[in-house]
Amino acid sequence: MAQIFSRSADTWLRLVALAACAGLVGSVSVALLMQRSDYRTGRGWIPAQPLPFSHAHHAGELRIDCRYCHAGVERAAVAGLPPTYTCMSCHSQVWADSPVLEPLRRSLRERQPLHWARVVRLPDYVRFAHAVHVRAGVACAQCHGAVERMPLTYKAEPLDMAQCLDCHRDPAPHLRPPSAVTLADWHTDEDRRVLGERLMRERHIDPRGLTDCSVCHR
Image 1 (cartoon, rainbow, N blue to C red):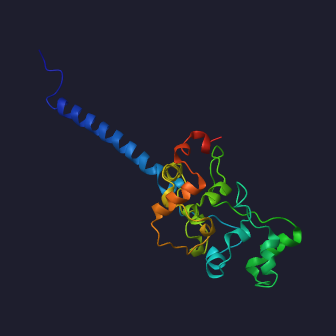
Image 2: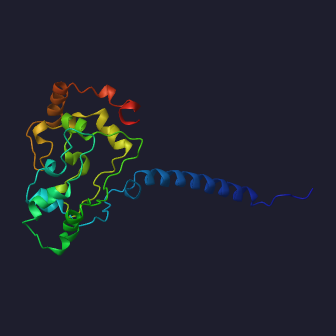
Image 3: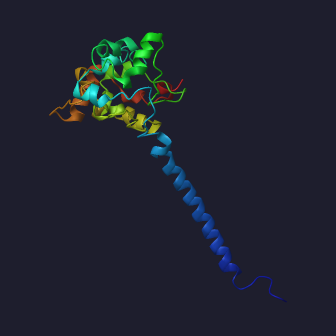
């Protein structure tokens, strides 16, 4: 009886099966890497803004408190952006004729707000409240990074579900006293875990309830 398959058929079958397995493993690995990549999360991305506002100058060099511009951060879900008249309280005197600030002056003349591009945008199904986190002792820098060193503001952290869950499962190392939440140069000699666990007791923070789906999702 004539041989149907060549002697090399077995070898080719094994090679094809091995290549298929390698391709499957490679595809899954690439997908997992892409899931946490800066390309997907937008970390490091600098959006175009109506004027080149520098946190490094305002928050770093001038040490303007975060709450002067983001007035809702302690009492509302949204931190808010400063209205034009807040900016003009300084810039009617400082750099008043600078060409780079013409969009700001036009905003005041035309009584139209500046349309700032959002640096951090969470999905619609995520419920995040700034005031809750600030009152708990979560510092601005925990999510937004060292904005006092950013000439142009960018997304410093992935702010994905994994990062939120890491903090919700173990809040202690991430907490500060309320008076230090907005301070860029805050430092403590106390062990952060010891400090955080004490703050959790004082604020009645129980991590067992912080990972329920309903805490973050509508």
